[in-house]
Image 1 (cartoon, rainbow, N blue to C red):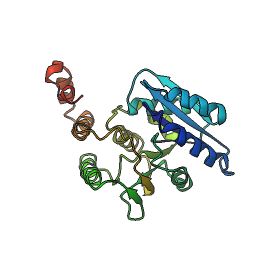
Image 2: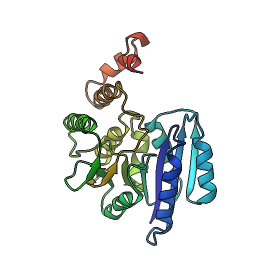
Image 3: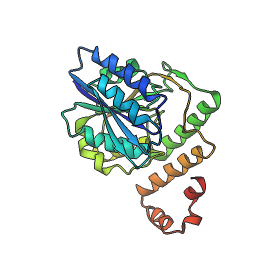
Length: 259
């Protein structure tokens, strides 16, 4: 198999190096992987992330990178997918830069995808090892329950940063995804199921929270809930509400208050 793993990175100079080293060493030793690449997508980095990635690239031939001034996880992953689709990759996935998902755990997704269009890690599976604070687990549970109802999802965990898809299903749909940085995972899964009725399964995993997380500010949960509602409205007979909202002055837009 030929694998491309996209890694969105915004100011990750302290964590990206260890991730690239661990993933490179693991996949370089896999005899069943014909070719693999770690595609880092730098988005609006203001630190030395690029330097760290360039050093890793000189050491490991599988490391590649793209560099953008624009920020955002959704934007970064979409650009990474589009770039990976230009090459002869069988599977294309993504992970978080902090290596909350180990290379061994990600490899389990690759091993189990056979016959499916996509596979995602499920931290809420009874067999999963999920190290997270009680408050963050509670918040995650509430949010995922909300998303399951809103989008009629069978998935218990849409936000875990470990997913992989076939090149075929991404080629058909990558330009149809309504990008949403706070809910990119939801937007992607919804698009693949809606446009191609993609067969996507979730499996247990090992996920360990790393120090330095940037996503759990006080405002982030509310932005995620509002972003999910907006995404659902776009794909409904009530999309006119979103169009009306976009015409409002910036001072009246809720997301401006939360930025």
